[in-house]
Amino acid sequence: MRNQVREQRTQREMSQAELGAALGVSRQTVISIESGRYLPSLPLAFAIARFFDLTVDKMFDPEEAGT
Image (cartoon, rainbow, N blue to C red):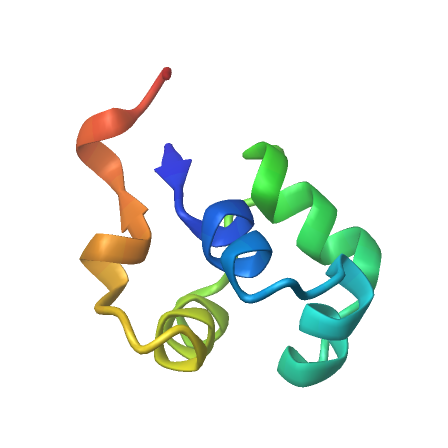
């Protein structure tokens, strides 16, 4: 599943640690989500999308799986 987390974070010039702190998760969790190794829980996916002012389907695009 492709996601926009890294792109959105870097556009805002945030570190992974800063994003993790804002979301209440570890830097390692942010790294895993960005790399696609970890799929966030539904509440966390909504929190991430809300943080970046996007919808969940814009933030996490299931149609882009495998890219």
